[in-house]
Amino acid sequence: MSEFYKPGSEAEQIVCAISGTFLLVTISDGRFEKSEEIRLRRGLIDTAKFTGLSATEMDTIALSAQAAFEADYDKASAHTLKQVAALKAHALARRAITDTARRAVVTDKTVTPQEENALNVLAHALGLKEGEL
Image (cartoon, rainbow, N blue to C red; front, side, top):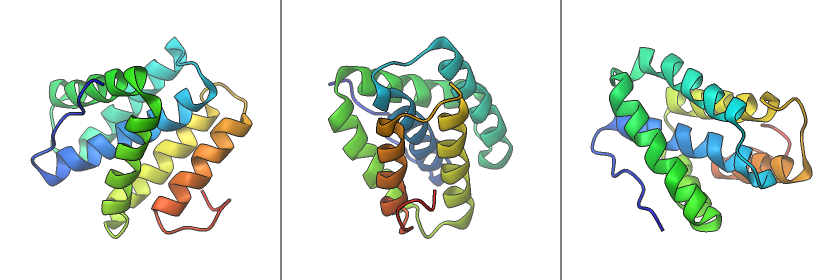
């Protein structure tokens, strides 16, 4: 499996969790379309406003996460869920993660059962009830 980017700062941890969240939801249906990739990049641009990371740093993190998901979806999902759970008490990160998960679902304008399941797993990692995400 491709290795995830190893975050050093809190900002990098947040971007790793956000990138992983987006990919966990969008790739859950078995495909990652160009429109979804574009949406991930746009979401990271919004995230840059509060992380202080450069576009290059954020792109490096996102590409690392994408490679990890493409290599082994299940392993990358488990890694992402650990990252998300570690940030559930961080209000800003939690908000960014929930917004990212919701954005990921509306990218292709349909919600598949796999995406719904991914949202429920993420909700659990954040300490939310099923369906709250």
